[in-house]
Length: 295
Image 1 (spheres, rainbow, N blue to C red):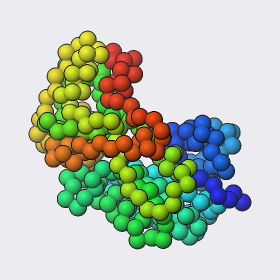
Image 2: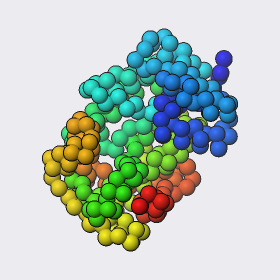
Image 3: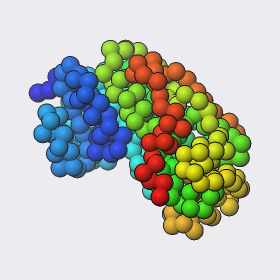
């Protein structure tokens, strides 16, 4: 039986894999457990000595607790179950109960910046209530309120550069953009930390950045003129749907932009450096590293 292990849920996702990579690079003391619905997807990590287990947040509670057994600290990566209201929250609550049943002492949870009751972000209730479930449990925890990934811009860069327009509904609002990699490094550091107790940390990049600034950097880096164009949330949602996104996902994305205009995501802290010992990557440096995708 594995004892005093570090456990990562949702380990086959992009963030989960980056966390596993960092834990391996750190050569952390003790064992590492990775849980996923599809263990075969993590065969390469099993070959590196990570114990891969099947875990279904919507399955038998006893089986889920067994999948978590032997872990002293666990990373609960928020799931992507957004197909119907309440499904993701139910999954998180099931995981938290299973952590308690399995004897896990400390849980690191990936949350969202400012998930307050009046937040316009449509997925804020999932995170707010998941944080509440942790607070109501017997568990110690570290809540990592991850700001918006700058990585989400990468897929649209060819279109942005071809059209010369960076279109969103953010107005002049600023965002403490952070890279997925920095979120992974922060999560791995919090998971492997000896910290005990309860804390909530804002995980951000080094500065709050506007879309106009992003457009300026894209112009400088690509040599092609890019202008920021801010439209209404309704027009932005319609444009996303027109480009093939499902309506529910388009609505979620637009709701983030509404939060940006309100200043809800203009949060900047030193938490990444305090956890990892390194400065988070700037938006400009991240964009410079994406030059291969510009054409």
